[in-house]
Image (cartoon, one colour):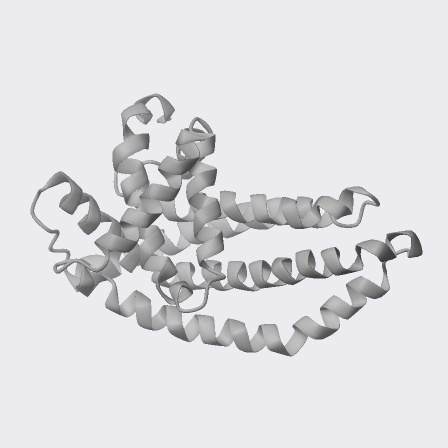
Length: 248
């Protein structure tokens, strides 16, 4: 339980750090883009959520009718989670270079060293490799999502589908955001996942808290920079000490 709280505390510290002078300049552009993508996600949610939910409820067998209210609440939360989950992945694909700079700046603040001074030209040179890495993560996440989707169609087991989707979202959140500080230290995607699996409770505590944050009005506008900063705190305080043995 203490490790779960470590993950939640890292996100809370990330929320505090992005408000500090010297770090705000790394937050402004991601924040504006986050507002744009979130507004689009909410528009799409309103457009198709009603019909999607009605279809699910109509497919329920009669012997589960007594669970209708509970399942309505669970699937409503699932719809919110999936929409914001998709919005987060798309936004991070575009904002990846800026997220890497923010993670570097936060880690330097935690270490007490000078702030980075990466030029715009240097950022452009890194862009193709960064985008390829982000696309690789999307394929990995899509494979996991397919497995959970298949679970959703298996009788009885599909009752646990909302919990499975939330667990997936928590894992995706920590893998997505921890990539920025770990990538700054040259860690590839495979070693990153192995390191996070060695700290499962802290990782899922952070990822679960981030997934919940994406569904809270107003706070979800700052979820991306806060999660980048929080993942950097998680790396700096809890993960890096055991990172050497995970390198390929």
